[in-house]
Image 1 (cartoon, helix red, strand yellow):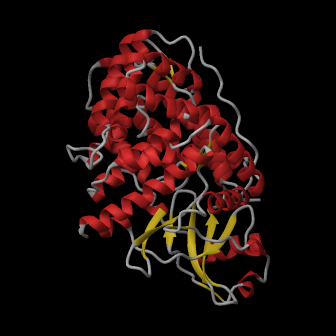
Image 2 (cartoon, rainbow, N blue to C red):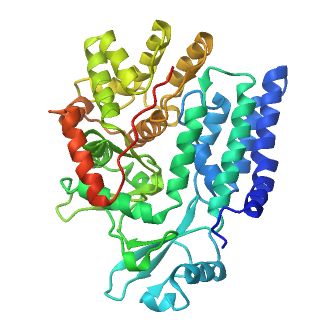
Image 3 (spheres, rainbow, N blue to C red):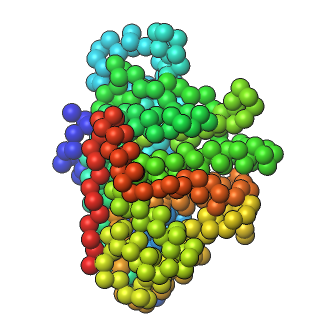
Amino acid sequence: MDEANTLGGRLARYAKVGGTGIGLAARFAGARLTGGGDAATTAAQLRVALGGLKGPVMKIAQILSTIPGAVPDDFAKELGQLQADAPAMGWPFVRRRMKAELGADWESRYASFEHEAAAAASLGQVHRAVAHDGRALAAKLQYPDMASAVEADLGQLDVLFGIYRQFDKSIDTGQIRGELADRLREELDYEREAKHLALYRDMLSSQPAVHLPEVLPDLSTKRLLTMTWLPGKPLLGFKGDSLEVRNCIAETMFRAWYWPLHHYGVIHGDPHLGNYAVREEPDGQHGINLLDFGCIRVFPPRFIKGVVDLFHAIESNDKALAVDAFERWGFVGLSTEIIDTLLIWATFLYGPLLDDRVRRIDDQGRPADYGRETAQKVHRRLKELGTVTIPSEFVFMDRAAIGLGGVFMHLAAELNWRRLFGEMIEGFTEDGLAARQSAALARAGLEPPVAPTLIA
């Protein structure tokens, strides 16, 4: 079957990716090691090369751009500009894929099914359709041979990390690689994504301004997910609206991401602009459509306790509590110097949440470079201190924080982020979160998370 993880599929993918991204990465490394060449130009060429490829390599690149020190700064800046707008599959290809998923009579199971894709992303594309009961639908169809592409691209990622380690050993990328592999493999399973969507519908049932699609199980498989279509407009189309509207959108997005995190230990790990839309409510307010539930991270309750404790530690300048929080995240035996350096990054991320006033996320107003200067400072310092292993749980926490921060900057939202966060963690207890998480996961048919691995 074309969806299987086959040797032939992997070899074809190696040829496609290896001749572009990895070759450029090797050239970049050579320039760094010898002191010659133009690293910035090579990084820009890498972005152009990857931009023409469908599949997990683009998603990997986008994620790496948000992790401090995971790849060189020049690479991170360029990879952060990638958008998952790969060319869509043509109708003959789509027709064969749909037949493979739903059988020869698949078209009769929809009242109508549009031939042209409404959107094309890194792992699949979406077609508009109509159900026999008149409901507007979105049919998300996975590209062929994605299992082979994931394994091949992870192999290329190993090569890239190996090249990078030749001149920078400050960040041990082992757990980063493992986290990326786990989440990408999960994203290929649309039956699991349907369970994630059920989980989010459960967790956000108390948030009426956040809207989520409904899955049609009879029109869904492991590689096809048919859901109700949610009407909405792109978020960036509201940049010119009134401050009241922009603040309303930003506050709803804050709740959509952080209510599940602090009440259930779950985060939507992909705050890409294509994964949400703004809808005008009947009362004139603005709600959010939250979409695409392939990249969902469930955290052990002790990890979320560390998130809350670190906030209190920074707020009260309690270094012992900060150390305990880092240990809850999976660190052990960190030196005082490394803890102080990690606190620089943590203080940046928590900064708006510690400031009890109405303000923008970044008072300096730089959405394109949000967090980059601080990340570079932290990375330089860690490079001086030795190798630090980043726990796997950080990967999508950082991605969500930086991605959402950039959205709030685009909106130029002015809110009391301290008040919003305070509402999220009011009455927080680890046992309470554990009980809510366990019940919600069971209702959605999902397994509990694995506890963090202690890192020496």
